[in-house]
Length: 334
Ligand SMILES: C[S@@+](CC[C@H](N)C(=O)[O-])C[C@H]1O[C@@H](n2cnc3c(N)ncnc32)[C@H](O)[C@@H]1O
Image (cartoon, rainbow, N blue to C red):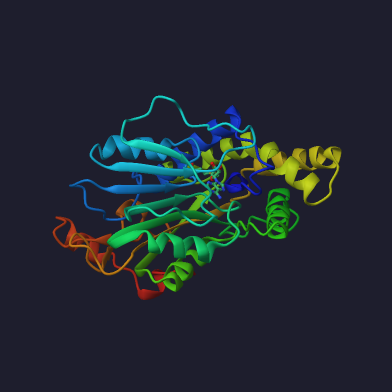
């Protein structure tokens, strides 16, 4: 899913095709999260202040605003290289789109009940600083949730072999992003960065995202199909300018290589995936709604890296969930 790559803001398009791809990705995220927009157990009542970091097309913020009509949704977004905001004009009245660089010093403002950041790998240079700034602007008992990728391709059955061109492309993207100091292998660091910034009750879960329709599980198959679609749609956008500008390839070299990447991506005998990580934590202590329990969503039981969610014992399925409690070694990234 090299589409998680954004790299230098200057290098990457935010044209209509890219906006469609981001919206498609929104559905992949929701599918991966069991239909949810977020996992944090935020209070549903009362006026909430919510911040969406790097909002993209704004689709997450708009759906949140509909789900929480009394909440105040603020988004921060840099301008894309067409120098115009890309969010739609008609949005719920409780959403405010701001042009704001989250890597700069955050403006003084009232703290938030919930800060959400999704798919910012390849965009941020100083992740620890981003967490520190988020910590300062999260209310006590408020939540942050970062959903992001760890863009290392793998297969669980050994079908991904050395020399696979999708794999090679991931390696080259990683190299290019590391060179411009905007890494795409950040998923496994989210928890540590949160803890170092002072967040408590830090949880994370790992969700494998397949590439292609090879999984037998229908839900994973659907995720894989959409992932393939966005991958093929975005391939040129996130590789041509990076490979030429950062790695020094010619356009012709890139085009020849991308043809090989497309061919290998469509090979159903290779069971490729990479991980999406969701990290959630409170600024300080648990809110009244949350307890240090976890549950595993049975839908994901067939997945080796099962879903991890803070859990409340008033849930009628409490006992069922308990039987699925993983060992402590399941709680973190392998
Ligand atoms: C890959 S997109 C993800 C969009 C959205 N979060 C989503 O999940 O659909 C990354 C977004 O972050 C924005 N972005 C990149 N660097 C940023 C920064 N320093 N401050 C604010 N937004 C930024 C980009 O303009 C782009 O819209």
